[in-house]
Length: 167
Ligand code: HEM
Image 1 (cartoon, rainbow, N blue to C red):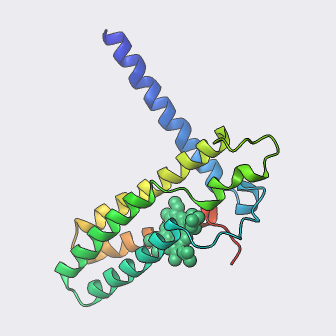
Image 2: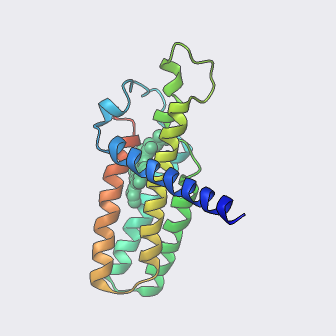
């Protein structure tokens, strides 16, 4: 009984480690290598894109209230950012959902490759969500500045890996 429990915990840990390693490798690749085919630019308006635009405006609003030291407003926008990143985690980026169109063997099914990429995407979005959570729990200026810098870096990394580069 105990042995079984330990084995499954070890397996979960190994899986997590494998995902982290894959994420590190994948995110260190430039977009052109991460996705060999990237001419999916016919699709520009997506639900995820709309959510991202909303995220951008909420982040701006957070920054504004931070600059005017309005803690109630800061909390409101941080909570909105938390919700948006949790929702975004459930949506699939165009570069992942359309990847199979270029695969001659694809029958419209989700490939193993797509599944791995989606897991990596979700991990990135969870990391962003964790940063927003930290942001929602602090009023410390120095800490907030460091967290905002982290958000910028996560945005850049997320876009390098998962956004179509056709604009
Ligand atoms: C606060 C951080 C972020 C902001 C402010 C932001 C903002 C944006 C904006 C303005 C767009 C363009 C939307 C459009 O014109 O339709 C966009 C697109 C996109 N972003 Fe972000 N983003 C952030 C973080 C991330 C992260 C961490 C990821 C990935 C893990 C990500 C993945 C994407 C993807 C995949 C698209 C293209 C939409 C699609 O494929 O449907 N973003 N983002």
